[in-house]
Every structure is written in structure tokens, then in C-alpha cells.
Length: 329
Figure (spheres, rainbow, N blue to C red):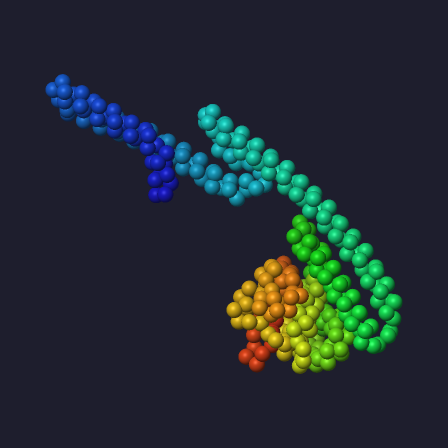
């Protein structure tokens, strides 16, 4: 019905002209006192003839409309499937579409080239910035006093922010370096905990963690990045108490802390890009990028990440792995 209404709208000038000419003939016959039945009979014949031709024309119109609808899904990649040219106007439209398509392809290629160059630059930059960070860590040596511990922690943050910038760029690239395989959850968690071990000690926070002996199908490097981001947030907003890491069957990793928690009104938006929330604004150090990257990575890996505010305070982040791919050992 929608197509029929659209067809009638495109032919409304012809319909109006037909009605107008019928009225002109009717008035002329009336003024000359000729029988109006002749006009009615001629008008009826013309109406039925027009109906037959309109049916054929509508069929062609509907076919063309269906072709254009199908083309909507593929016009981004090619112009194959454009309706046949029937007149000069159709040819002009096709040429205009071709010009726009070629210009779009040129702009996309230029954008991809610039994006590739930018990604290459920041990749080199991250690797270069890690060299002086490593050198400064060596210079600090094994000194164990408050100043050296604080310097080491700040160097670790610089390295983490550099990794975040590289991750942000790579997630939007055309190809990723995902290596999906069976990974021991404990191995990934231990790497993340080891990285923040000095912060746990300096802040005197209790770590509640029992190895699960389970494996999941994921990408170890990217999942390590996610867990590190979550632990980093927990350490940032937990002044005292504990951080618990629990693997629940059939395949859910739960990271909970006793920190300041998340405001209920902020909960639906914490995974949005750039959103820092009430606590983040008070802290004035939050970027609103960490949890956004975690969600993007989990979505790409087929996992689901969510956040909760337990009644007794703190924050709980849950990562649900694909249940069919979870393996127990």
C-alpha cells in the first residue's frame, strides 16, 4: 500500500490533467447542448485504458523501487545493481550517484591513509616512550623507601596511559591482532596482580583471590589489558579494605572492591566514552576512557562486561565469558 501511495503521488500531475481535460470536454458539450453521455462514455474508455497502462507502469515502478531498496545495503561498497536507464533524467541521476560514490571512495582512502599513518606514529611513539620508562625503573633500582615507591608507581601510570592510547587506536583499525585460544584465567589474573603488587602493599589493601584452575577462550593480551584497567580503577578509588577477584562458574570473572563505589545515577553510563561520573569529576584525574575501552574489547571478544553497586558499598565489575567456550580443568 505504501508503494502504491508513493506511485500515485509521482503521477498526480497526470491524474490532475486527465480530470481537467474531462471537465473541459464536459463543459464544452454542455455549452453546445450536446449529450453528456458521449463525454462520460469516452472518459470511461480513457479511464480503463489508462488503468491498464498504469498497472504496467506501476509494476515497473515497484520493480525499480525494490532494486533501489536492495541497493541501499551494498551502495557503500559498489554501485552494481542500479536500475536500468530509461531516459535522460535517469542517466543524469546515475551519473550524479557515480560522481558522489567516486568522491566518497577517494575521501575514505585518504582518511584510511591518514589513520594508518597516525596509528604507525603512535605505535612507534609508545615503544619509544617505554624505553626511558624502563631506564628510569632501572635507575630507581631496588630502593624501598616512600619516594622511590611513589616514583615507580607514577612511572607505571605513564606506561599504562601509553598502552591505553595505543589500544584506543588499534580498536578502530581495520584489522586487529586478536589471538583467540584457550587461556588459563589464573595466569592472566596473576600477571595483572603482579603488576600492581607494590600498590597493594603501599596502600595496605587486602587481596582476596583463590585460583580457580579454569580456562576460557579469549585473547590473553587484550583480556590482561581489561583486568589491569579494572584493578587500576579499584586501586584508585579504594583507600582501605580489600579487592576480591573471584571466578564464578560457568564462566564469570568478578572483581569487587570496598572503595567509594559508583553513584546510582552514573551506573548506566560508566562504559560510555569520556564519561567520568560524580566520583571521577571529584577526583579530577579520571579520563573516562578506561572502562570504555574495556567494554569495546569485551564486545569484540564476544564477552559481556557489567558493573554493579553492592548494598554494602564498593564496586563490582563482572565479565561474562562465552558459556559454550568455557573450559574447566
